Image (tube, rainbow, N blue to C red):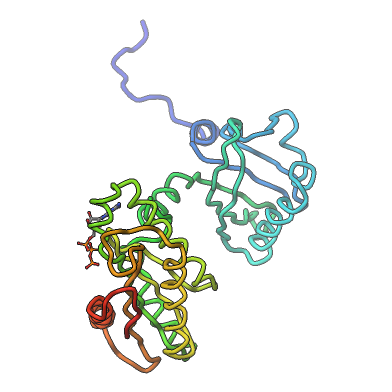
Length: 308
Ligand SMILES: Nc1nc2c(ncn2[C@@H]2O[C@H](COP(=O)(O)OP(=O)(O)OP(=O)(O)O)[C@@H](O)[C@H]2O)c(=O)[nH]1
C-alpha cells in the first residue's frame, strides 16, 4: 500500500525551476499588450513577441531572422538602428517616440525604450526594444490644452507655458509680451446673428492671430468665450505693438457686418499689451492684470484699438 500520509512534494530540480520561469517568460511575451523584440549587433531580429501581429505588413514567417534594413524603409530603419547602436555602444537605455501603422491602417505613436543585453562577462551581445502604445495618452494631452473651436491653445496651456516663456525671454535678453484680445460687443453680435455665426467670428480672430504671429515660439490662446491672448518675445515694445496692430487691422479689413457695434458697424477687436523686461521680477498675475488694464483702456478709448 502506498503511504498517503506523506505531504511533502518531491524536491524540485534546477531544471524544473528553469522550466517554470521559462513558462512565465513565454506567457508574458504572448500576452503583454506591448511590443517586445531583440536584435543582434548586426541589426537582425532575434525575437519578437505575439503583439507584433497588430502592425501593418507584419509577417511572422519573415520577421525573426530578417534585418531591420530589409523590413523597414531606409530612413525608418536608420532611425531604429541608431537607437539600438546608442543603447549598445553607451550601455544604457535609450527612449524615443516612434510612429507606426497598425493593420487597420491607423497611425499609432509608441514610446520605445531600447536597452543592451549583457552576457556573463558584461559584454553587450544584443539589444532589446519594448514599445508601449501612447496614442490615446498623447491625444488626451493634446485635447486638454487645445480649444476645440479655434484649434488654439487654451488658458490652461497659457498657465503652463508662462513661466517657461518668462525664463526663455530672460535668457535671450528679449522683451516678453502678453497681449490680451477681446471681440467688441460680442454679446450683441451673438444676439443679432446667432451663436453659430458668432463661432465663425471667433475662428476669424484665431486666423488673424496665427497670420500675425507665425514665428516659432509665438504662442496664441483662446482663454475664454471671446477672449484671446498671445505670448511672444520681441526686441522692443513698438515691435510688439505693431504685431498687435496687425491683428486688429486684419480683423477690421475682413469687414464682417456687426450692426450692434457703432460707429463702424463691423466686427472689431480691442487689444491690451503688457511687457516684461528681461530683468523684471513680475508674477504672472501682475503681468496679466497690466494687460487687462490696457485692454480696459482700449475699450474706453472707443474700441477697435490697441492700448498699452
Ligand atoms: N458664439 C459664441 N459665443 C460665445 C462663446 N463663448 C462665449 N460667447 C459669448 O461671448 C459673449 C462675451 O460678451 P462679453 O464678455 O459680455 O462682452 P462683449 O459683448 O464682447 O462686450 P465688450 O467686451 O465690452 O465689447 C457672451 O455673450 C458669451 O455668451 C462661443 O464659444 N461661441
